Image (tube, rainbow over all chains, first blue to last red; front, side):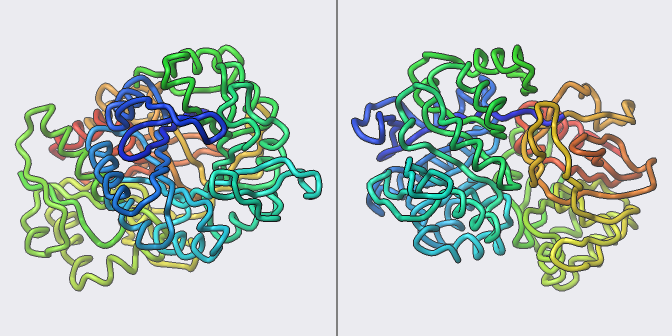
Amino acid sequence: MLSTRVIACLDVHNGRTVKGINFVNLQDAGDPVEQAKLYSDLGADEICFLDISATNEKRKTMYDVISKTADSCFVPLTVGGGVNDIKDFRNLLNCGADKVSINSSAVKNPELIKQAADKFGNQCVVLAIDAANNDKMNSGYEVTTHGGRNKTGIDALLWAQQGVNFGAGEILLTSMSADGTKKGYNLKLTKVISENVFVPVIASGGAGSPIDMVEVVIKSGASAVLAASIFHFGIYSIKSVKDEMEKNGILVRKCEN
Amino acid sequence: MNLVIIDYGSGNLRSVENAFKISINNNNLNFKVYVSNNLKLIKDADYIVLPGVGAYADCKKGLLKIDGLIDVLIEKVIVNCIPFLGICVGMQLMAEQGFEKEKTVGLEWIDGNIEKINYLSKDSLGRNLKIPHMGWNNLNIYNKKHPVLENISNDEQFYFVHSYYLNTLKKDQILADTYYSHKIPAIVGQRNYLGVQFHPEKSNKSGHKLITNWLKWKP
């Protein structure tokens, strides 16, 4: 039977891992290549890099990080951040990324989802949605871009469904209000999206303890759970998360394999 | 020994190459690894890997684009009987036909067609099953004595990502299957050629075991 995935996410800035609270106040949390290898050895089912470097020259540093990670890390690797066109997709995949996540660029140009899915397959196009509360939206959530700074006026559920129709193979769903707070995932948001699209939905933003991961799977139907800070600072191990999930009847992959 | 990973414009070639090289180095195996579409190199190959990512129809077109490639593959795999491994769509291409995007004729080395997973059901937690079948799943091994499955148990998990599967009535060519909504062949083949629906190159230690077994296989 299929295991529920536990994904370790590394926000990378100028070649170093960082994690802030609500996308500001960046704190240094180490070398992404070493951390990715460590996480895969310790049982992470996937690794996700989010490149938050602003400039193109810093992106080259990211290619180097991805190549080195792909050489030593044999679990799927998703990379996102600053992906603007098909060329960026190709560069990242050639470095060894398995999936590429797109966010602002897809909102600006939804055709990019289609082009990438046609060219590289649906499985490698991850649509990242940063959703914020907005009662004016039918689903109750609005798509934001640029780390939550820009509101788009687009309903998060409609956008998720449209993205899937364009060919996204997976949705990486981040709650902007929960992100970095360690107070738990946004259960309502995750439920409304994962019940209404046919591709897997990764819950992101807000994980503070293993029980948060259990809740978002059981109550909201998430296909996978993603977390960053609780792993980086050694607050919880991947194994402690998986043990808690297993205790609650969620199938997980054994950390030793 | 020469191992050629076929480069036909499809697939995560770097990951596949890396994973095979690590298995070779860790086990002191004597292999040279080439990622190539050079027909002369392929003719000299002792082992061939056909990766594949993306849509079936596109992958088949990629094979056809390299003039003479399919003939060389048939000569090496079907006539000379060297060890062959198809990965994901590379495995699916071994079937008779694929139905992703458009009806496409495959290599016809194994019986059955590549059809969409029937996913209109729920899992044990009441979640809707999603497409693609994405993530780590167990094997149910039928042929435990096969050398490629040595030391691999039903508890181990492999990384799958696919929306189509091999639908076949010929059960003796299935070495192992997995379960997602219904049974899905995970390792198929006969004689000297095998195909895996999952990605051994992304399946960490379990994947390395399978790759190493395959590299040591002398069918």
